[in-house]
Amino acid sequence: MPKWIWMDKVFGEMSKLRQGLSGLWGVVTGTLGGTYTLDSSRVDYAKARALYDNTEESYKIGAGFAKKIVNAPVGYMGLPEFKSSDEDAQKTLNDFMKKNESKAQRTHLNAIKEGDCFVWLTREEKKSKLFPENEVRIVYNIIPPEQVTRIDLDPLTGEVIQYVLESQHSWHDESGSKRTCKIRQKISAERRVIEIDGENPPNAEPGDHDNPWGFIPIVHFKNDGDETTEFGKSDLESVEPFLKIYHDVLLASVQGSKMHSTPRLKLKLKNVPAFLLNNFGVTDPKKFASNGGQLNLHGKEILLFQDDEDAGFIEAKSATGDAMALLEFVFYCIVSASETPEFVFGVHTPSSLSSVKEQMPIFIQKVERKRKSFADSWQMLARMVLSMTSQSGLVTFDTFETSLVWETVDQRDSKDVAEELKTIVEALDKALAGGLISEPAAVEYLAYWVDTMHSYEGSDDVEGEKDRILKTKLLLRRLEDGQILDAEKNEAV
Image 1 (cartoon, helix red, strand yellow):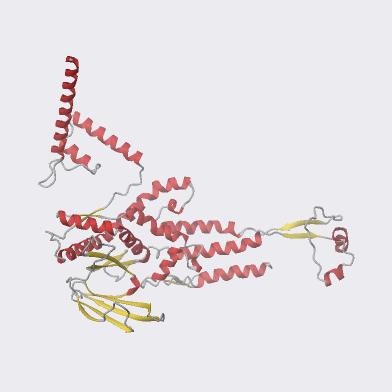
Image 2 (cartoon, helix red, strand yellow; image 1 turned 180 degrees about the vertical axis):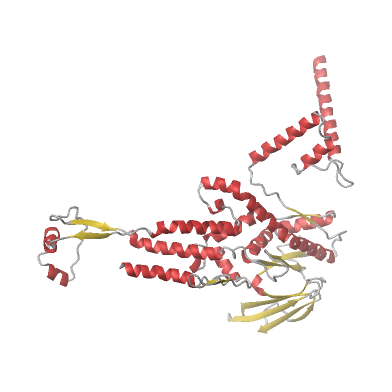
């Protein structure tokens, strides 16, 4: 391929990059030196899924980072544990979360990936052969976020007063013909209005239905949202321009390497007919060229040249090598914008060790921020579960209030944790022996590191660590006394 044709293709790719990184969030750039505008409207959920699954053709080479950016915080976040002062409420919530653990995990995944996740709780009263142990069960349903077209808020309090849902539904009738319709739902605390455009699908009853709960059984998990935004933001939003740049730069480099990997033969000749005759047996060069003759170097281990003649290869400089600095810069832009440690992307070990030490604290802060942003939604979900269970008449609860307990995010391994705990215990023991600290203070401090310990005095419902220590000492003393008695009996015999 002539050099000018290849360069035209390269400049064409760069022109596309400059003129329009029009992707998931409508990022648009003009020519060099132009303006930069960002469309901050609602996320294109289909595009977000395509980036996560790496099925978007125009991002194919760069979108491989997207799944790691989403999966890493989801994996470290885990799921919350509900704590309630009511034992029945505690048991109900534990059973509910245990049965829906996979859906709850997917809630975090969808919210971080797409910006929004809507959970709709429904109560199933029909007996099922698959669930014979439950006469009434609460079903955890995840609504595709694109179906929620509008959220109506109270103008004074800002609370949600109505969700508007629209969805396309298709099915096949008894003859096998495909049928389609559009279903529109308006869900408020008092009623549920169902409207159908087209034929009515099976098991769907359009009209105005009463809402038996007295509240909207939908919880909105909004990622990185605030009071000024109706919907959340995807974690892929901040890195999408860099994914596009990485794809375009690497694609142009790979395309250029096809030419660079095949060097071109260069011949410096004074007598072309003599060269053709001596090496290829061509007696008439003019006739050979007019007949479309081709020279085949296969098997030619030796070429004969006259004085001042020479042969060599034309090799262009690798475009991949020239792009390495830019690709590395874009990679670290992805690391910084996504707040994801570089070792998550699978870089080499020396860099990974430094990344754990330097970048892990930032990543832990990101995980803690995500947990706190979803805390209100999880607590609201717990209230709905308890309310729906209570209204079923099976059990009553003293309170619907709950608190959340998350597993501590710790980048250390078990050996480091054990060594630190050993150092703390030895320090507390030495302080107690030296009279520098009281036993209650030592117990309260150590309880922060050992989850199974209670507070020193305890409460009416929870036994204190002081009483547990005394019981342990009495048990050990009894065992010692029993061993002494056995030893004395053996000596007497």
